[in-house]
Length: 255
Image 1 (cartoon, rainbow, N blue to C red):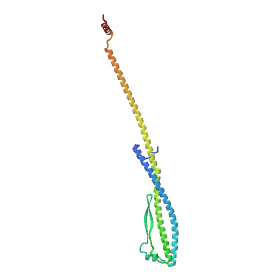
Image 2 (cartoon, one colour):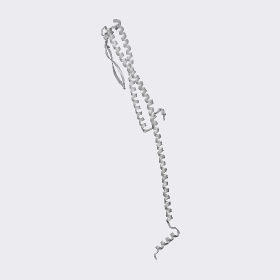
Image 3 (cartoon, rainbow, N blue to C red):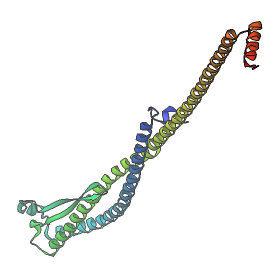
């Protein structure tokens, strides 16, 4: 039997056994569901990890092209930063957020809602090219931010789910199983004690019945002896009995 530290402190009753079995079934069901959730999250985590790697590589290439395009614009037209600052009054780049549910985990996803660089709307060929390249860079950056956010959230959720799965598998379920074994062993011991007690009670009843039967037999025997003694005391003895016999014989003779 396992030690008390590996089981719960409960009273060994049929009700406790039923409750513990029900809790064990619930723990096993929860473990199965959490394991499936962990597998689904891990699959999605690996897919996002691949996308993050691709997005980072793409981001490096796009930013390289964007930097080169800005260098071309600066070489062709000079510094255009002041022009952009003067003409940009409102935000021209917006990001919208949507939610995606993965096995009960809500992941935010960022998307480009609107993009229009007003300050670069007019100009030469280099400026238009720089505008397109930086628009692509911003879209890639938003995509990377979305993937990185989902990656971080999934990493934390997977760690927490793994801890819960391991706790149920290695702590909760073994403890409940040991508790069930303990309760069953105690109930078996109680059944054996009850069976032994019943045997003792039956043996005592047999002895008591035997003693009562012996007493009854002795009483009946004593009553029989008393009746015989009474009959002997009332019966005639000696010459009186012989005279009575002769008298009865003479009365029967006919001359």
